[in-house]
Image 1 (cartoon, one colour):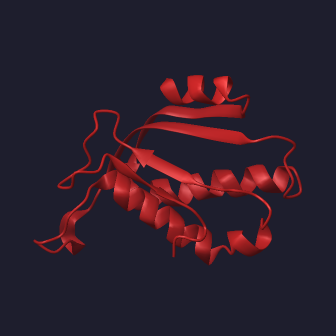
Image 2 (spheres, one colour):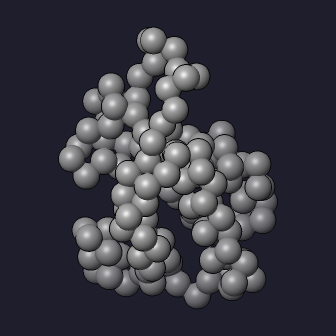
Length: 126
């Protein structure tokens, strides 16, 4: 995986949590944020070095709540949902001295009906 190579080249600790993610985007966002939270709690909020958790696979978006003029794709939705979840869990207050980001991207360069390949979100996004 390119993400794993990037992490290694950047001297980040990293874990490949799965390469077969197959679930609803809402559940995937919550799960991802839970992994990040557990990592920080494992180190009492102060890990010794930068770290990357890697999940790869496919998420599914329920289109029942989408308006016809909506734009974007499942990676953008995953990043937005992760930002909301990090905000609700008060990441910016609990882990104030760390840069936390969720990068959700399509490796083919496409994500739904927009020109973007995905999105990046932090606890400060919302």
